[in-house]
Image (cartoon, rainbow, N blue to C red; front, side, top):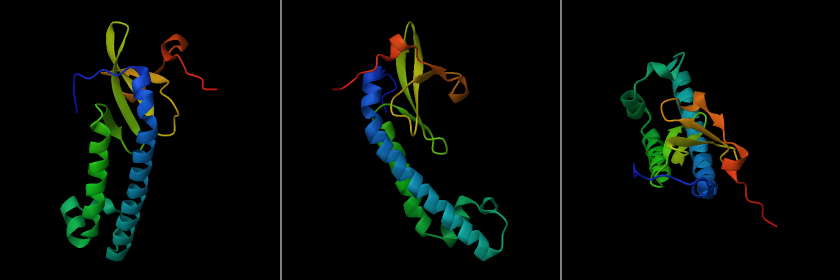
Length: 142
């Protein structure tokens, strides 16, 4: 990842189709991991998978290693563009961008068709603000 890369809104929006595919793949893998952990938990008679460390999980269910590696590769696939993967649960990706005289993060959430929000770097998702219409400059195709 290039820490100095700043995206334009158009550049960030152009990545959304690829990010959607990657995030969808990650969501599917995550569901399978949770199902495997729940099955393992039931087999062991435990209440939650949280009782097992990562090493214990991989020792008793080695097939999870490939899934964890797939998830790690997907994160790398996202971050190779210069954006930041912020979490699978909400499906968040941030793009550093210049907004006025400030460097902010354009904030995309899985399911959104274009970037409509940003936040200051120190605020994170909780500080998301709507981009003003003149900042968004939507493109319409005929």
